[in-house]
Length: 118
Image (spheres, rainbow, N blue to C red):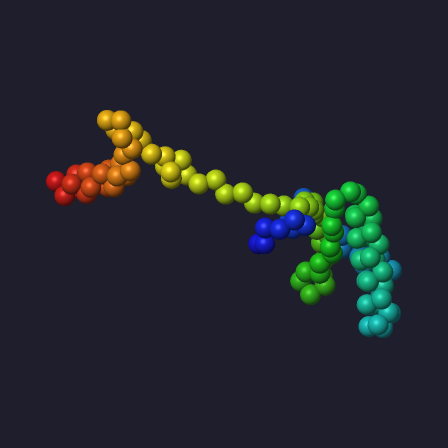
């Protein structure tokens, strides 16, 4: 993920079954093009109603070959910048007899290997 101003992440807040709303006005008498147009109109209406809330992005997906439809409501978080905080042991130098002890982690590993051999 690029760490740049303007980066965005989306967090899914809600997933709802909107099959009844999507199939409103769709019947077996419609030809394929008319059925497609009706589904597209219903989909756009559902998305427009959902995105009326601030910082929300919505999408309707068809599942099981169009047998059911689900609306995903996502929270849009803008201008995301990730920060990494390393573990406390990194750069944490101890003093031993007034001098910096930079070999402390290595000394512990040597002692551990001696204990494992015993």
